[in-house]
Length: 94
Image 1 (cartoon, one colour):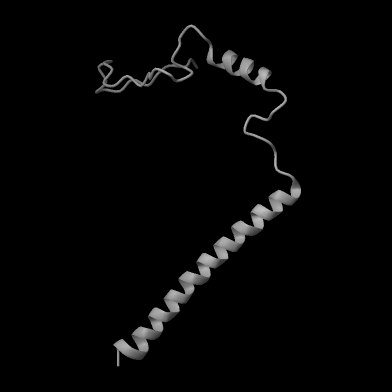
Image 2 (cartoon, rainbow, N blue to C red):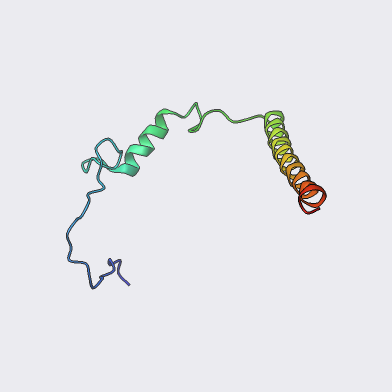
């Protein structure tokens, strides 16, 4: 099976909006995007692509604080919900 684009009945082949934006890495047709990325990665072998890697203790600390933030948010919402139910049952519906 060959790679062919799907043909739609209402498609007449015109380009409505060109998504080829100046400044994006794939805009220049003369340079192969994959080759350019490989060259960039070759230059940056000493430093990881997305910065330095976290140590185990840093990862545990970030995980702990993320869970703590989630639990604090859950506790705050639960408190508001309980206070709302108490207000409705003790004051509003009497």
